[in-house]
Length: 90
Image 1 (cartoon, rainbow, N blue to C red):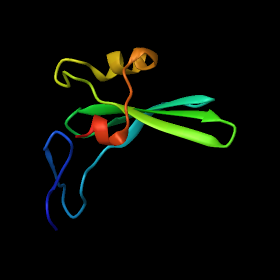
Image 2 (cartoon, rainbow, N blue to C red; image 1 turned 30 degrees about the vertical axis):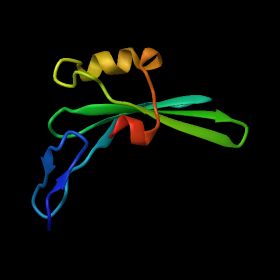
Image 3 (cartoon, one colour; image 1 turned 45 degrees about the horizontal axis):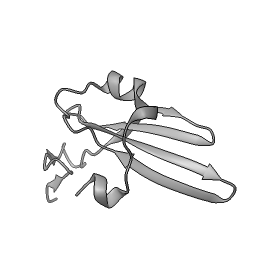
Image 4 (cartoon, one colour; image 1 turned 90 degrees about the vertical axis):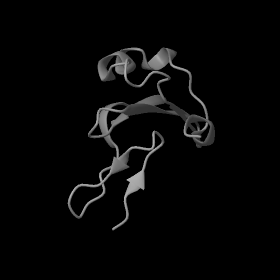
């Protein structure tokens, strides 16, 4: 199985399974937040805003991944800057 790189170009492989990101915290409602983390502690946030049948999904990746803690990211989730997937992970 080939190794896979994430947006930080970190390799992920554990046994026969590729290790990616998993949801560690979530808050659901009209505006929902999901915090994802990988085994190295790198994280990103996803925000979904629902208006009737329309759902807009945006992402926030910390600028300083090594110095912004998982807990701080969750606490400040409402004030993070969110962008499209392409902008967040390019």
